[in-house]
Length: 225
Image (cartoon, rainbow, N blue to C red; front, side, top):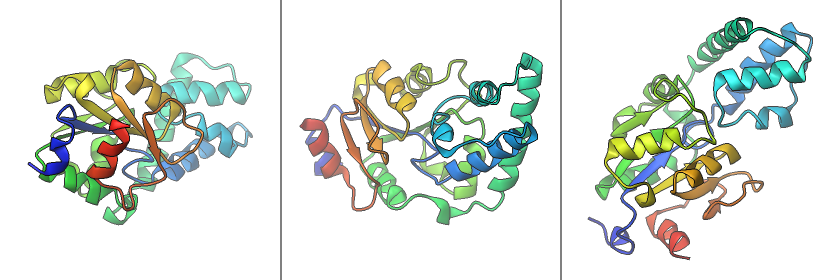
């Protein structure tokens, strides 16, 4: 085991969100949501799309319908959400390992080489498909996605299930998230949090712009501070 881990034996597992943390797929979600909104002659703004990060597909669909002034039944919302997923998966056909975000694969590999347990905790029901496209699905011992949980972030279910399956206490886990809903879910789970990207994220233990030049020594320094 590397000396970095010995600096803080409480860290036993890492949980990574997928969209915006491991892969740059947020723009594909946005394109798919816009395609739905255009059917209603509604232009989905970029700042509105930011509010969809980390929440379930159906909840996102409800938000967009509300913004567009559409009063739809649950069945209609579900049908539109399914349409959106079809659009999104079509866009994802072009994904490859080059679509992983800078530095994240190197950081994950460093964690893996220490023997640390690794998990993905994502609201996406397509997480395994995306990880296969990126060719990193075998790196993670545990993948918890939207098919395995009933409650979306900021509820902690997705992260608590990941910790349970890794057989690690929640307090021994570090979560990497790019959305406020995800940060809050990790906090609600009693886990340490590292915010990725946006400076608007609140209440995380530490924040980094990206995984470029990031390593376990830096992580542990942040957590210990």
